[in-house]
Image 1 (cartoon, rainbow, N blue to C red):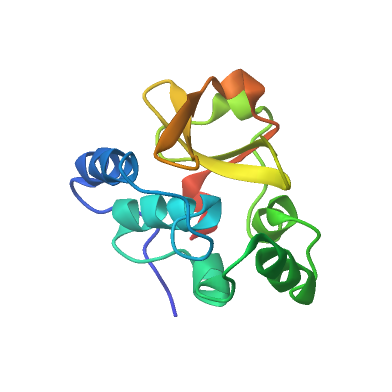
Image 2 (tube, helix red, strand yellow; image 1 turned 45 degrees about the vertical axis):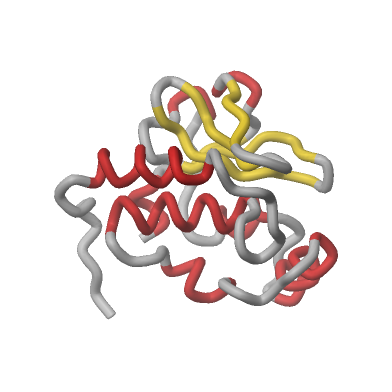
Length: 145
């Protein structure tokens, strides 16, 4: 299937709304974890989920389950999964609004979304705002489509 790589009209407002809505959510593996948050923010920008998400969505309900899904697909972590789709940005600090970034987390890499000069990551409850300088990798949103 050929897809347009252009973000849909009004994507900036939908991205901000998606981030704002996530501030009230609690962490839930497979429903509102870092991968789900990244996918929902990408979907808000394009109007449909990224190809990688179509392959992974709904396949885990725990941290161990997420790790199993990644291993079954041939990846050690989410970084390798994203690398299989697009090249990393040369420096994570170059992440622009809507791009996906990764920072070290409890069980490995945690995914967040760049917006407003920060990167937003889901936490136990709500979101955590981090400086892009703490990120170890970033991928352009367009490359994930």
